Image 1 (cartoon, rainbow, N blue to C red):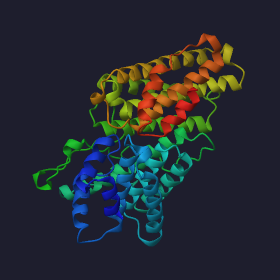
Image 2 (tube, rainbow, N blue to C red; image 1 turned 60 degrees about the horizontal axis):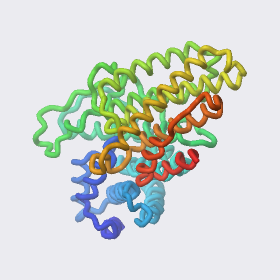
Image 3 (cartoon, one colour; image 1 turned 135 degrees about the horizontal axis):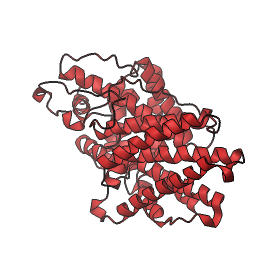
Length: 399
């Protein structure tokens, strides 16, 4: 099945992996060297989990291609879903099986099927818990290979954690609870990809790790920053689900203060706009937009909106965040074709869409007092729709 799919894609395994790494740098949950080793063994040592993972990589790469409408990704999606279900029933959990589910969930959310993505990410979390991926015992590693195996396990669990919160953000119907628990403060963050040696014999010592609670002043790789940003988004989503901010203003203010400190430092460290909006910046901005809309929504429901200084402060904050998203879209739209990323990163699409939806809500609330130029958002989403059908959902709501 894998070789037939590759022939239809006119691709090889090596080229497929290169495409995957260039299209999804913001979700590095499959590590190149060990995966390539497993692929090389496929010719003489059949392994269904490895073949399925290669098929799901092909699935997300096909879904990100500009000619998505004419490629066979829908058929491959059904194939991947069926194989994923069969392997869960017939085999013990493996890391590759969890990685396959994670990429299927990514494809589903990108295709604007959040209900299916919600179920798939839940199965990934269940498999991950059974393999204890959520536990970082803080142990040392005897050699590079043992470190590499632990690093990939951490990346897979943090990938589940990230996608779980992104899926929660875009589900518009009933929101099921998070399927993965929050990361413990001592859980070690992934390291920079530069630390991953293609040749394991070149590694003299294992890279050092920072815990997820490390202050933003301490340099970490960009994927690690994404995970720190997702912790804030997770906290905002829990506040949205369980708390009336009018009754617990201290909790809101504490979260707002910590989030703004993180955002300020993060944006100082990543001043280049869209090129780095792909992960941490987009997730942080999405968290800020959601947090302040919670307070406005509570004020409207309690009929204190016009007399609330807090709500007024949140309106000003939202205007600023929407303008930041608009300016970033403007900067991206002005890039030449070869300067743009080949596949718009999903967190950036979500952030752009959330800024648009927040602008629409503010227009409904304030009428002519609120004006917003939607054209930069529209152009950015039109580019993103080549990779993610989710962008169409936001475009339709713009009218």
